[in-house]
Length: 348
Image 1 (spheres, rainbow, N blue to C red):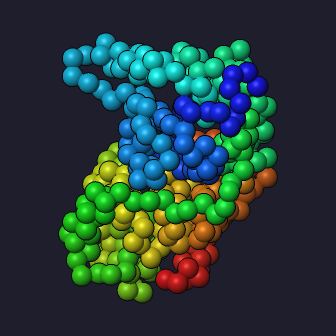
Image 2: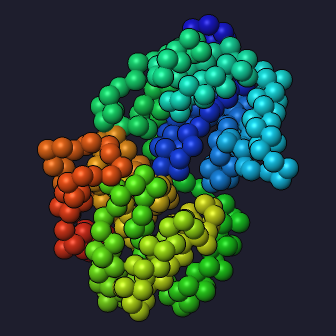
């Protein structure tokens, strides 16, 4: 390996993934890096909300928000921000850069920072930009968390040193969760959260009507139910709450990630599609039931001690499509009673 030996690294750069689920599946690598290089300065670059979510872990410091948030003054300033981050990191002189996204642009960024060692998977003709271009396994051959962990092997951080700790929740998130829960479910100590949407698309979304009926059943057993999602998912979440009736409310668009993490950590149960919220629930240790459609649970199941996967793949799965021409048989095969039984098995 060119550059400094693994034991001599003092400045390590991480280009983290852009998606919530993916960045949470990178946590085994983050902790392995810190264990292997306890005195190194580790800087991470990722979208700002993801950096904020992981800040409480104490594994890295922010190297910059990427992609940059839109700024007043026009798109030229948004374009200038990545250039500024790259310039700052180049002056910092990273000795090694681990490139977790599979894109060409992320490898180009690592090269532009001047990192002597640049490790990532061979993909999108980007191998010449990396000093170590590892062979990328077929999707599902390894869990994605293990794929990320393998990127640390050349610098002595390729194995987990022990059980992965639960995701640390920021104090600010806990305080905001107190306020939100006091408004949404006043006086209720036990509640469940649901995520009826997925940013990936309909091929990951169990039918809305089944979510509503399941919410009714949970409410009948004494649980309040909070339907969670982003602002763009508000309409679906509100419809689930309305169709479910008493004891079910929507919090879509009302939380940042640290607050959502604190809410989910306190929940007795999370029922989710294959989505970022499923990964968040698994990471904080909540009993989680995840419903899988077109994708591979062998590749991207949430990492956590209390995660249960429900999946009945037809012969065409996993197809990894966002939409389906034949009526989503993979999702239709997951029956309401089966999901309800999994929830009861989780103690609800």
